[in-house]
Length: 114
Image 1: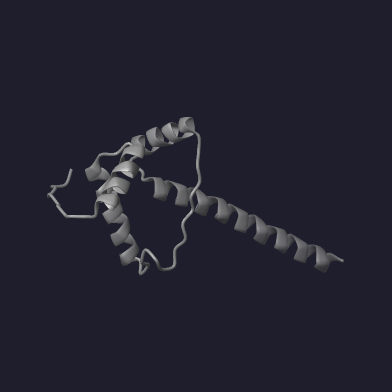
Image 2: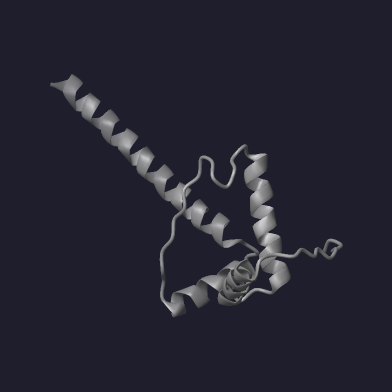
């Protein structure tokens, strides 16, 4: 585990309440939650994308049971929610794109055979 340092900042009460609510909802410690937010921010900066830049937000609700199963899986595999979901989306899109290309190639072959 890497060394840690304390970070303290004064923020508006309303923002503090939002942070605590989300952190508790996710079942994380405040340190884990704030650390993940900061990591995500710097990852986006490194990739040339800002929070308001070339990115879109996906949001959806799942059952409590599914959420708990997902949380256990992510913990066991040391994954973050975002990387897991983005990976699933990328894999599904890649499979779909390959099948689309195969379908187009098949249609071209049919056209040539006629």
